[in-house]
Amino acid sequence: MRAGVIVFPGTNCDRDTLEACQEFGWEAEYIWHNNPTSLALTPSPLRGEGWGEGACSQRKLFHPHPEFQALVPCAEIHPSSLKWAGRDADSGNESDNSLNKFDVIFIPGGFSYGDYVRSGALAKFSPVIEALKDYIENKRGFVVGICNGFQILCEAGILPGALTHNENLKFICKDVELGLGKRAGNYKLPCHCEERGMSDAAIQGINEENDDWIASLHFSNAPRNDMNCDASLFTPHSSLLTLPIAHAEGRYVADEKTIQELKEKNMIFLTYKDNPNGSVENIAGLYDKERRIIGMMPHPERAFFKELGNLDGQVIFEFIEHEFA
Amino acid sequence: MNKYKADIIVKLKNGVRDPQGSAIETVLKRVGLENNPKINAGKFFSIEIESENTQNAKEKLEKIADEVLSNPILEIYEIIRFEQV
Image 1 (cartoon, rainbow over the protein chains, first blue to last red):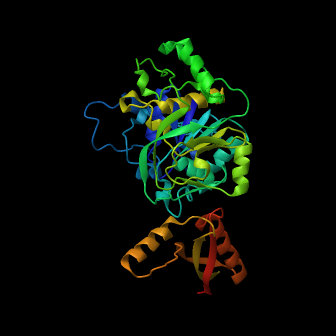
Image 2 (image 1 turned 135 degrees about the vertical axis):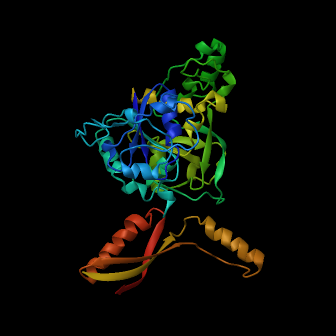
Image 3 (image 1 turned 90 degrees about the horizontal axis):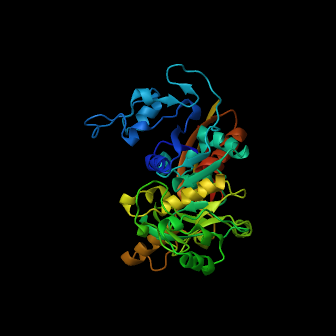
């Protein structure tokens, strides 16, 4: 799987998202919001190559495109690892102006355009969103909007409804329990429970607990990499995920007609167990009608590494991979 | 080309919850400035554009207000001042 992570001015969850994709075994690249195929960086230094000694403190972004250089002063990337999507940094050959090389495209969290006017209000006008609409129309792959990404998808009209100020007017930053929405039809995902030594009786018990398709997901899935992971790192034996949220404008709002449609077409992807922000119907995440686009307020990429004590984010990626395949 | 100036306000639609307004109400009550306030908070934009004539100017302003300054799902806009400079 090849993933693209869109970066706007003000985006700050791009690196976490990209690292999560790589951790999951996908190839991943950044996509700059403006002129998308002229600018894609191969992120090899993030995995430890090319840093050299003393590669901490004062890192500057080296990139020939002055706009990107000015706006994203972060990690140092060795010039030889720079690669423009569809052309070499040196040769400068033209390529097609599309996102078609990607199987999945992420719109990560952060504060695109400073959340000015409204969160995502200005980002929706970037050229990459036009390219994304083509990508969606061509049914090329999956789109995942996380937090600010979800806000941008709603502002752009790609997902219905809107996200606005939390009910309590606070920036909420905490772990929340979430339920995956019901899907039409029977749907079984691969179960890794045997690898983790779960007994048949325990697996049967989960299946009987609820008839929702998510019962087959078994959130005690083993992590995909070879680390020997503690079973307690996944929310055990329940139909609930635990993921962190961090937002001030996370309250989902939609009119009656839209809500009716969301329910009828099984477009509700994630719901809060204890609604933190006043979202209608406790909605934390949505599908589009075709179920090729997900928007979600919680951050799966922040629950991806055993060092952080929660691996439930990997479940979302496993789901995406399965949906796409 | 003529220059036109306009002031545009953006308000929440009736029925959309306004936590900012509620927060202000709470403070007004607490401070004693008003016992039973009702407040709806909105946004104010002051814009200057160029256009061939008044008609086109107004159309352009409406487009700006509709597509950028407000989210029609939640908000309505009002052009409260308009003049040719």
